[in-house]
Image (cartoon, rainbow over all chains, first blue to last red; front, side, top):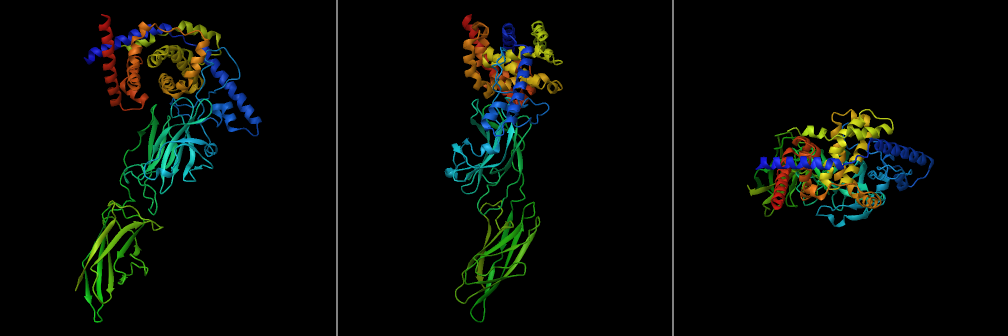
Length: 402
Length: 185
């Protein structure tokens, strides 16, 4: 059946080709030469006019010189996404059949123009999106929504839809609590108005899965052949957390309807900023002293089960009854009055253990029979790195009377 | 199955040669390039858009862009692939959609481009019922004679995806054409 269909269609298309061919009337190479020369001439006139204008409104400049307003961009050697040098308007009327073939609008929008433009911003991920403006959003000094939403870095220019003119791709952030990101492709319509082509990629937001979804976006680059390269990471920057995201470049392309990933990795590999710690506490035996108080020695072991040394420094914490006194060894120094008591220690090598010994005393009277120990890695500012166990790394201390 | 050869038989060199004689100085090889590929490309885009005048405009625009950077395009391994991609990109881009209104207005003042009679475009009508991706795949396969890997490269998708589009598109088209034949019979 498939062979029959193939033969049927091959025959139908052959007939179609033969029947349509006589109706095709090429405008000719002379018309093509005329069009190219005319566009070149318009470009020169426009460039001369621009040079004479000390102050020129950006929109007027765009309308006058179209694709060359920012100088000739780099063109990939074998790519049809070559930037058009075409112009929209022609000052020289002509009878050429190709005169009415206008070029694609120039979609290159400068950072300065973007910063004060009204942009159509796609939706933000759920979670903290209430304060993030979407739809038609007016930017001032690169910000909107009382400064919560902001354009990040410099825009890049890419001919994403292969229409011969470049579009503008820019990274936008919204930071109501933590930060979400999206990369947006913008263009101009035939009237010069800025329009949104679509969202290239966005972070998954507060409801995304840390460690596997795209949770942050670092930067954007122009790729070859109309592609957009985006530097993404897998942890949402927020609050008191250390920046654990890796940098991973993924490539996206416009398929005529939307952007899809066309190259680069689709999953995040092992992350050296994510710990795999285990903490255990030996049973704590408290012995009654001559004055009725209690004393004992707590031994805690912290194990690094990850394939990387723990990032930054190791933070150990002990939560016990506030009336107790704790005196760690020389490797750890608690700040009196803190609860839980905490100190920082050097990083733990792959597969290694760190053992702490803490002398504890308790006042006379009934013993509180429970305590808790915690461990996590922290950066230079004390912000915590994530652990594979999302609930944190802790252990209960069992206290017995000796 | 020799489809490549049939493309060459469509070249109408005489008409184009007379045009180039009266035009500006030639760019080496451009005339031959234009003569070889204008018509096949236009037929492909007509099959895709169903509008011959628009197809001709888009292909002419693609050749203008090739001419503007002809030295670079001519040095490519496959200049025909370059101009084909530009023409198809124009056909699928917003460039075409944004021009629709102005094209319509222009045609009110112009002599209509002679189009094939409705009876001859049964295939075009059948094609118009296919999803755009299947339509492109079928046209690139049967009219542009592109192998699967070239279609996949042009469309920016996996070869398996193209095979799927072709499979579905072929079945749907064949069903429609068979049905039409039966109806006539």
